Image 1: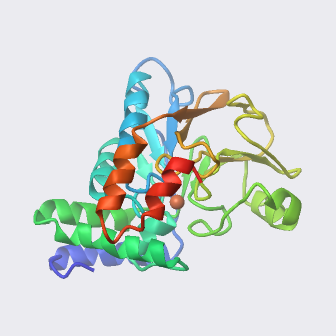
Image 2 (image 1 turned 30 degrees about the vertical axis):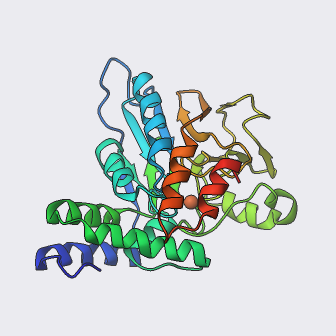
Image 3 (image 1 turned 90 degrees about the horizontal axis):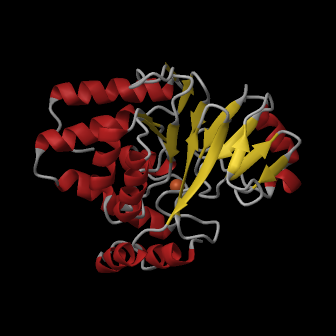
Length: 291
Ligand SMILES: [Fe+2]
């Protein structure tokens, strides 16, 4: 941790750690409606896995603004891998209703867990960026936000986690699990009351309890909400891995979920990755391939 936090900062960070250790979850209600729509009718943009990719995040935020959507939720991994962690975290702090803690956010605030060498090096470089900002107020604001991220949120309309409802920070729910790990899917669905939004795999789509998985293409980019339980992966803003390099996110409308893809200036991000020694060139290359 940054040794320049004052005593008050450390006390507040310590209480955050204790909350995580006790598995706290937070119940929230949506922000007040900005027009005549009730909170239940307000569209909500749900983004995830930005991974320090400012070019991708900027395009997504611009689209959300263009649609006049006021409520934005983030499912974590704001940072890690990418070249602009500070700018991405600042954007999220200023625009999102809440951010769930992802495994990369955890890695920066606490320590990397089960990371490969490229991811671990990126995590240490990212932490260094946080610690080297000379502006103490800005630095501490970011640490506080990172430390205050909850592992799950119970929104009025859905549950939100980074990985899975069972192991919210680290468990992956892969599309292939419907064939190879049906018991795992069953145990996960036991913890879902209706809708659960996740990120983490960087592969968007909808899991249902049967078990089955539908990609956005299967659904024509629209999942109609029914009584049926669903675990909905929103995909990744900053590092898609479904062989489509465009940014992915969703909008929760009153009766359906809309999957959105947006092209962004990938080459600029790749050039930034290449210019930073601590970031493996592979982390840029995979952006071009969406894999
Ligand atoms: Fe991620």
